[in-house]
Length: 364
Image (cartoon, rainbow, N blue to C red):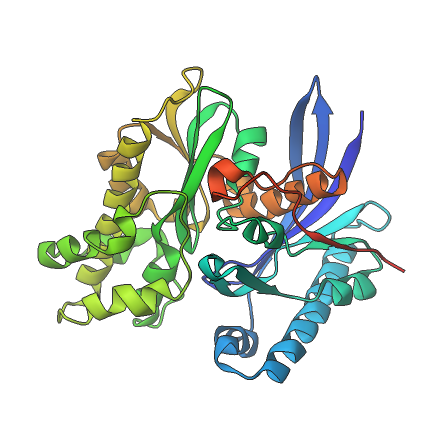
């Protein structure tokens, strides 16, 4: 029985910090099993958050310098994580997603910074990174990539919903395949509005729950053109400032009402996508369950609204899985990359074929 010991790193579009998860994988009777034995979420300093959020507007030299600096920074975080959790000699490889700076699959590129060479040099461990690039080169969206993990590690659940910076969903089909795509902005939008109140996020959705949905705004949000596009499809972080905020700015609403309206918008879009997916030949062996992970799973009000609108039983798993599923997904993608097996699914991304995606930097 072959085993893999991987540290997965994930930093999402909401820029709330770096997730690190030490993951163990092995196969039993042809089925992959996993365990997250320890994990941390390390918030960004204001300096790093500003540097990363503004990088797309800088020159090429600044971009490349930040790519290198961020790689060394991640390497330092990894070394501290390994020391803190007594993992010396117990790690086979690092799986680093990096920080997405720009995502333009329709133009044939996506960019996640965090030099794999710098991470390998700092940690003296093999690094798997650039996990989306091969899929984009094959004509795919390069996103979402988490449905791969849904297919292998969370097989009993028909729908898997990730409430990260962007909400995305996967659905299992009766031919053993899977489809998945981005639905709408989630924490990117809700955390931006919470920031107007001086808060990093709306804890438990309490502020949203105190507000009232504004129906004219809700209607305009639900009519944004992206939502009528067929899948596979993916969203970029620019969607919020370019498409959503101009609509919000048309209405002079109190922030609780804005948060409430946006939460209702998110729940509505998720419910509509579940109904759309039921029109596919879904896997009859899976229960009609919506398995919810990501930081948004702790937004009690949002989950309540999703549960009220969606035609499925909602399930929020244990805290480790909720918080670190994306880091787990990166780690599992690295396992398949090291085995030279497909780790990006064309049924999800729309690529011409399944791809073995990612670069490997070996330690010296």
